[in-house]
Image 1 (cartoon, rainbow, N blue to C red):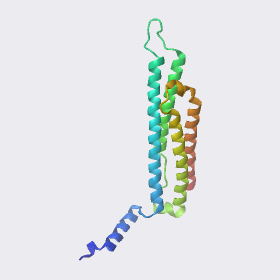
Image 2 (spheres, rainbow, N blue to C red):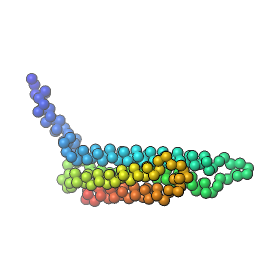
Image 3 (tube, rainbow, N blue to C red):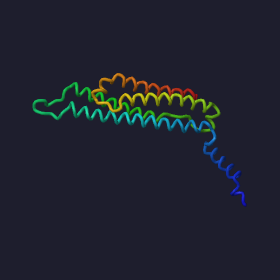
Image 4 (cartoon, one colour):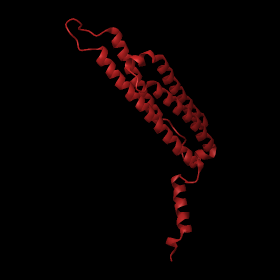
Length: 182
């Protein structure tokens, strides 16, 4: 047998490579970082479903309340236009939130920054924010899911509160990270 097949030597070489790449399977920070990415992916998915529901409700609302123009009614009802625009705005805000969720920073995985801060504590703090984010996204989705455009318009204040809460949580999360890296 040669040293090539020696598990101890191969394991040591692999560990050396992982450390060189800035990764170690057995560090809790790596698990927390992976969890953070997965959670944010799921939040984006939930918000994507909410956006699809709003888009479908907006389409049905436009179809029902904004018929093609006729000689008798060449212009749509201004209230119907305002309602369609409100639903469109909610859809745009959901898309913007999806982008913000996916673009949220996480602590870098390098040896220099690990010297100056406790990465595990920072990631655990971000995990707590991500849990709130998941709950807020799920609640917003439940409010929007399978609702008609007319019903969504009656709940627009509640939907706006949900969107504001999500933005605030994202801002808190980003500020927690920026203060942790100082």
